[in-house]
Image 1 (cartoon, rainbow, N blue to C red):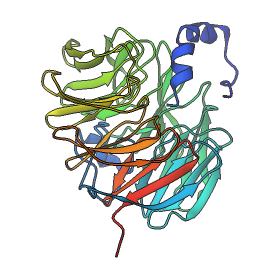
Image 2 (tube, rainbow, N blue to C red):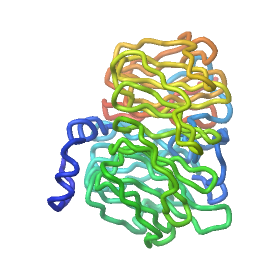
Image 3 (cartoon, rainbow, N blue to C red):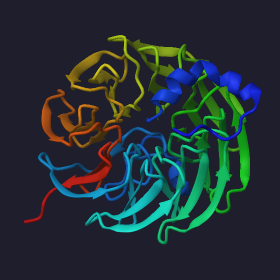
Length: 394
């Protein structure tokens, strides 16, 4: 992996403690009105942002077939750890070959490819006819969704491993948020990339930012849950999580749901700053984001298990074991839970009881998270391909 661009001595020293953790494991749209949404499911026809909605709940509109078939696959030149977004009839996804691809959603045919210059681990964000995405070299791009031509870019001083987020109020200008391994969260005007504000944390930012109710919430490798005002980047609150937070945080109401690197999954009350409940099973970290429904929280971990908890109190409802660690963040579509595993398999489980309904062996680890739209599932794989599953037409 390429190192970040030039760093001063102070930055290098501050990053030493987290290097072994976050750097090794980082492989882990909508429109302005959508940003005010809290935890609404993604529309059934599109999936324009990572986790489907600004609050990062991982809940899709509509459902998927009980026994989906492979509809198409597209081969890139490197591992695909990025996750897809879907909109305007196209799929947008990054690859470790240093390119961002636009693929026809119906056929998988390449529409365009943009050369980003270094591995694209981060999922794109699709908003206002623009694809926003960061690279492992720390460059953040705005790309025209129709033509694949660059509109503007910014260089940060560290890797960008996570998806950008929408940061606008209902009536405000469209803005985007992106965190970097240079310890900073950036807020840029979507139209021209001008800086709105920047917020500096104490360590790497590996996950995406959840947005709801005029604030953004994200975890950092400084072991803090950060709560900021969207308007100006002002700190509202910092909550000590006790360990590195490499996962993206999901929001529902005034509670944040996330796992951390020291083997716990937390539910935190944002208003009080208190931990509402903790879940600990085996001594393995949690790197993937959780899916949050009206009454359940579903997430996987390096313990190779998908867990389903009662949202109100953290009581375990079911577990599903796989044969590899889970970095893929699950998506709930109807009564289905969809995710990938390092055992090379895409799984679909019953939300009710965790029973396996369907699986598909891709043969290589699947760190990419599902994008679900129009009753189809799109995922990347370490074999370098993008796969689309759905109902075959007769």
